[in-house]
Length: 284
Image (tube, rainbow, N blue to C red; front, side, top):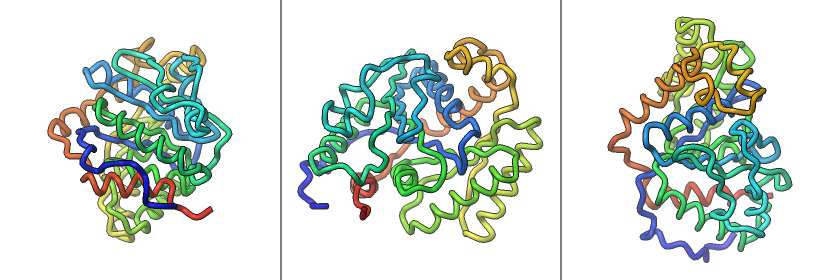
C-alpha cells in the first residue's frame, strides 16, 4: 500500500474515546452489550457513534430495531461515503450498520481506503464515544480494530470455553508488539457478582503471570430473562426494561467510563494514524 493518502495529521484533533467490544467466541452476548451500552451513554448526554465492524455477521441494526437504507458495505464498496450510511437510532446515538460482501478490509482499493479513513476521522471529531462491535475470534480484522481502539472491552461468560477463548484474545493482542490499548474484562451472564469476580480473577491472573499484562476488571452483567425478551421484541433492554437486573449492570458499566474519562486523552495523532493504517496494511 502506498503512502500517498490525503490525510493531514495536523487536522486530527478530537477527544473521542474509542471502545472496541470483542469476545473470543460468538454467542456470549457481545452485541447486546454494545447496543445497551450505547443507549446508556446517550442517556448520559454523550454523543455516541456505533460501528458494526462484524463483517459478515452484522446484527446491530436488528438489536436497535432499525432498518438502515445503507450499510458499511455500501461505503466499503465505494458507492456511499461513510457519513452517508449513518442512521440515528436513539437519543444521541447513531449507528453505522454492518453488511456482508467484503470479508476483509485489506480487499479495498486505494480510493476506498482513503475515503474510509477520511470519513472516520471526521466522525471522531464530532463524537464523544465511538463504540466498535468487532467480530468474535482472533481474525486479522478483529485484531486491527482492537489495536486501533483506546480501550478494549473483552466479553466472557463463566463457561470454561468462553474463558479460554477470551484468554486467546489477550494472548494474541500481547503478541502484536504495538502500543496496546487498555484491556478490560466484562463477565456476562453471571449468576452472582462473586462468580463474575472469580472468572475475572482467573483471567487477569493468567495474563499477568504468563503475558506480563495488566487487565482491568470492568464488571459483570447478571443473567436476566428480560434480555431475551428484549431481543425478540427488537428493542434494546434499557428502552423497555430499564429496571431489570442486566440494565442496572449496564448503567454501572457506563458510569465507570463516564466518571473516569472526564479528562480522556486519546491516542497521539501519529499513534492514531499508524493504528488506523494497520487496518489496511496486511498482505492478502
